[in-house]
Each structure stands twice: as structure tokens, then as C-alpha cells.
Amino acid sequence: MSSLRPYQHIERRKSRKIYVGNVAVGGDAPVSVQTMTNTLTTDIEGTIAQIRKAEMAGVDIVRVSCPDEGSTKALKTIVEEVNAPIVADIHFHYKRAIEAAAAGAACLRINPGNIGSADRVREVVKAARDHGCSIRIGVNAGSLERHLLEKYGEPKPEALVESALEHAKILEDHDFHEFKISVKASDVFMAVEAYKQLAACCDHPLHIGITEAGSKRAGTVKSALGLGNLLWAGVGDTMRVSLSAPPEEEVLVGWDILKSLGLRHRGVKIISCPSCARQGFNVVDTVQTLEDRLQHIKTPLTLSIIGCVVNGPGEALMTDIGVTGGGSGRHMVYAAGKQDHTMPAENMIEHIVELVEARVAAIEAGTAEKAAH
Image 1 (tube, rainbow, N blue to C red):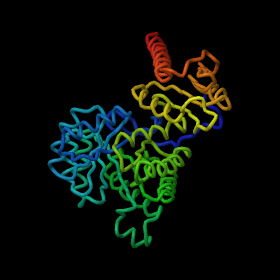
Image 2 (image 1 turned 135 degrees about the vertical axis):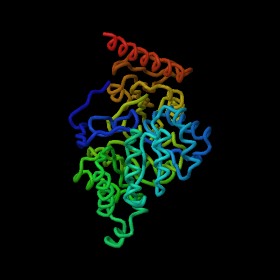
Image 3 (image 1 turned 30 degrees about the horizontal axis):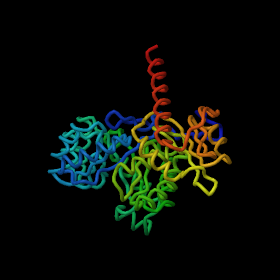
Image 4 (image 1 turned 90 degrees about the vertical axis):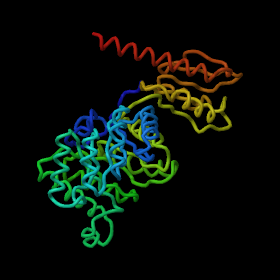
């Protein structure tokens, strides 16, 4: 419902566009959301099930680890059974990269400087080119090259950037340009500074993330600080929130960060108060239940759930549907910012779900009609 205001505008960094399967990364493409499976890749059924859960949460790209030949063999079946393009995570063995490309990976996560001789790099680049794979150069503060650690004394933003550009040059020397770069660190300050420095000196699309961020709660906070800082500054073309949690949780947090900054919109965005003694209903339980009940909705819609009349009417002005707690067991419902009707406390959840679903159906019908003309 709300339109973009000047102070909400984010000027995104101009980067080259590449593709990970059918997902555009960089250029004018929206910031994509990634996650990574944590199953054994050889557990084909378990890995597919995990990817499908991530797809339900809205993932754009999924990374799968390929540490051995059994994993790259399994990858072929996995790729065929899921919709999201798959990034094969490769570290040192160049043959795994070649096998993954042949198995249908859309992208190879590999540092070309780590896989050995120039001949091996040439073979990997040829495999990527032959099979239409892009590449992600993945620099990490925890695994910097020895010569850079000796030069800088410790992991530093400058060391991360230098490592990234060294790897990028190898690909460019092979006339391969379908790649993106990440310079991750678990330290928020280091990661943000490294990304900002890298963004200023190249036009490669950037995959942003705070690596090993931690548990669901702590990692969400760290990621929101680091990724929010970068995205607000216009830096970042694709992102992963790294949590010690199921992959779909990473996806949901990633979407919440993007929705908070107005960079992407998907599903119901709930604006709710923290609740207090003025509340006319149990706000905390209501919001939790609604989040669960409305997960299936993909069409963007805003819903305000405010416990009393102090802030309720004001928030309702900014949302598609608003609910404000009232007295005598009845609560006010707003539509497009205006009072619409009151509803009883009984069956409140069901009533709100019905309102949201009806509004979404109307939006989708209008969109379909426009497309038909």
C-alpha cells in the first residue's frame, strides 16, 4: 500500500550481470536469497527434502557441498528433482568441479588459486564454459592464503580484497567473466569494510554474507547488522544469512532483511507492537499464530497488528490491512488505512486470515487481468 518515499531510496551499486541457472545476479536484477544444505549430499532424499523446504520459504539459489566423488554423482539426481539452481561447493579438488559442472550445477563455488596448476584451472574454466556454469570466488577470513597472512600479519579487509582480486585475475586471464565474488568474515566490521573496499574497485557482482554468524538469534542479529549495512549502502547482489539453524530459517531471515529495506517484497509483512498493559488482545500469541498461518502466501501484502488505539490507527494508515485492539471484546479492522468494520475477539485469527486471503486473491486477479491485456 505504501509508496516509496525519498528517504527510503537506496541507490544500488552498478555491477555486471551474470546468471546462476535462470537467476540473474547483478545489474538490474533484484538481490537474490541463498542458503546451503547441511545434509550429506550422498543422502539424496534428505538433501532434496531440505532444498524443497527452502524453496517453500522463497529461496532463489541453493549451495550444496561436493567434497567427494560420491557427492558429485548424487548431484545429478538432486539437480533434476529441484527447482532452485544449485551451486556446487568445491574447495581444492579440481576434478570435483569438472564433475559437478557435468552433473548440472548452475555455479561452482571455487577459488581458482587453490586448485593447483594452470592446466587444472584451464580444465575447470573449460568445464564451466562448456556446461554454462558461472563461478563464485569465495574468499574467507578463516582460510586466507599464507602469503597474504605473512604480508598483513593477520586477516584484514585489505587482505580479503587482495585475495579476491588475485583469484578474479586468474579467471579474467582465461577470458572467463561469468563470476561473482564474496569476501566473508565472522567479524562484522571486517566483512563490511572488505565488501565496501571491493565494491569500490571492481564491477563484479558481489555475494554478501557474514560467515559463521552463530545461532538463529545471535546470527540473525549479526547478519542484520552486517548485511543491512551493506544493502543500505547499495552493496550486494546476492546474499546468504549463515545460521546454525535449518536452511529455511536462513531464507526467512534473508527475506526479512530485504523486506525491511524495501529491496524485495514477498508474502505478508506484519507490523506489530511489542504489547503492553493497554493491549485489547494477546498481541504476541496473535502475531506468532498469524506468521505460521500466513506462510503460504507469496503475494506482497502489509498487515498491522496493534494492541490498542494509541498507535494502531497511525500504523493502519501505512498498511493494506490493519487491526487495532478495542474495548468490550471488539477490535477495529482497517482496510487501506480507513476504518472498515469491527470484529469480535472470538475467531479473530480466522477472520484476519480470511481477510488477508481475500485481499491477496483480489490483488492476484488484478495482476492477471493486467497481464491479459
